[in-house]
Length: 258
Image 1 (tube, one colour):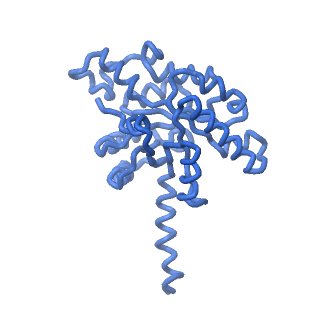
Image 2 (cartoon, rainbow, N blue to C red):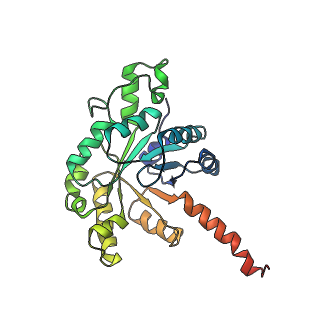
């Protein structure tokens, strides 16, 4: 059974850089791993990413020691299957109440923390080979990372109770959905609320994750977020492709290519 290298990095106070991937491409996962990415988040919320495709991408990441996280709805059956398949973490959006957290933890962790359906022969447990059921349960509870995403006004109102809920490791704010939930005010207002949530998470000992976006300087965003104590910084694999392609295509203009 595999050790969660991302968790080790966070526990040591280090910073991890990751990629979000929303399309089926184990080759891309391998390429990111060779380049040195720390983790990959497979987006099963917004993107068309089926479970069999996910399995192949998990294998690609594992071969290069990349931590795998699945972003998915608060669905206990789906959470169960991706963890049994070998994902080392889940990332659940639209968490608005402590009760939402309770449901997520129950689905993702075994007794005594949760009541995840027990399947000792899962891929995540080496198919049950040379691993006791007790070892599997303890290992999974210790190594699985749970990220909850705050992205609606209701969640902001309930932030203290959410962060006090046991069993979660990481918090992330979804600023775009939060902006919509707040009635699409000036972006500075959303930024202020986001920063307050990040500070609250850090004060309660939670790690914080954040996306960084192509439409602004990666360096400036990372510098600012690090100042708030964010340890996980994620960029879209699509942004990597867009940035590289734009740079290459810009040669037409800079070199006056006909």
